[in-house]
Length: 399
Length: 225
Image (cartoon, rainbow over all chains, first blue to last red; front, side):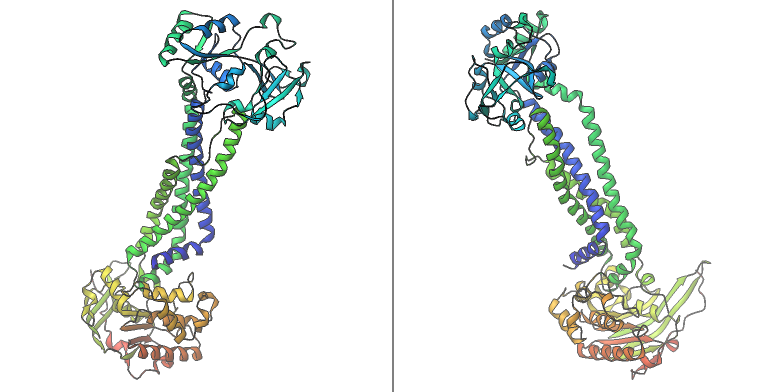
């Protein structure tokens, strides 16, 4: 009780430096957690966000670009492939499902993607399929659309609303198509990039006015489910090594992981910055307590005169450093929640991938504990100074 | 209760030699007795009290508190003995400014074998007339009230010996008079022996047993290392 009382009162007595130091710990802890959690969660989310497909077939080009375009609805399409290519892979005995998509238009920046109704029957993840939140599925022969949840919310689309598509993937008011589409339904959130898409019938996108009539049957990519994983390597050989016209992107997870490897240096720089901030914060604990030691010498000597042992004084100062660490670490979790939510919001808006602030990861315990330990370490030097306070010299001049 | 035998203490000087401050051949204080030592500033009175309290290690000699020999103990055990058996009243009160009145008294017993006892602390503060100031901080009290807190704190661990170092030095004559009366009374009520050092004749006048510290303390002139 006595030790806690000394620690508590010392924190109160130096409230300003306690708050400032704990705030720097909180910032360091929050930053460290955010960098770590955004990195691990986004990597896991992006590599898992394959919308239920094993591979993508597209025009010759970068596999990464193809996957980003067809599954994440980012980047431009590397080109088109002929309907016969689609037919060929659809009939391949190793292929379970093959669904074509066509891109090239947008509605106020949100992509319009043409496809077949079969897409919505595919399992996005085990046991999870697209579901309608309102309205019905589009009629493949009509000028109708089904909006992803995020796009519908952002654009205020409801069943029965009409819109004109805009040419290209970037919104430009001057590129408005004459066709009018009616929103038939709105999908329930899937927490995948599909939430940012407005889906149209494939034929509608292919034949929209202003597109090259010679490419009216072309598709942008084919999304593929395989019967067995080994078939992917066979098709990889067939399209990528033996052929030179098309690209077969497989496996999707590995291709996205490659992207993270390429930008891994950026993660490491961010991590390094966070570690440096943590070290500086621990240094702040050391400096703030150490600097107050001169002013506290008399209090320490009084406590010693009352019977406190040197190790009790050492423990009190160390305990104070740890208490600042605990306060900072707790506040750090709040900082993390705020920072992470902000970053997750941006990622969701840009990609449709959802990161969860409440998702458990051992780093959520290890980073605060590490910060507390670092603060304790920062408290050792001032604690040792307190340990060595000469009682008789400090208490009173000799008479 | 307190037996001092051939107690010596010297301090180093800047030129490398040592100057002896305390050399007390013998001093005795019975349990529950009250004694005052008269001495001028710089005569080594505070050092003498620090040696008795175990705040300083003696060069040689013996300080016995009952059956326990303070001068034979290592520092940590001297601390424990002080927490158990000695109460200390300082000239400047030496209250912990960041702690309330009640907490100051609780800390006076917190390091002892019985631990902090809030009921006893309240009782003592009531005895010195401060039961209405428990949650006040020292800066919110008058100097007289601060001295009374210091008295309550010194008695908090139920000490066998109370050492008072110029306890009225910072008080005006009226408050000094009151404080001394209180210290003597409370020590008597608690069965604690009291050893007071002062150069103030008015303070010394309260005691029946007054000894001249200069007669007790005969330090050597200079000691070569």
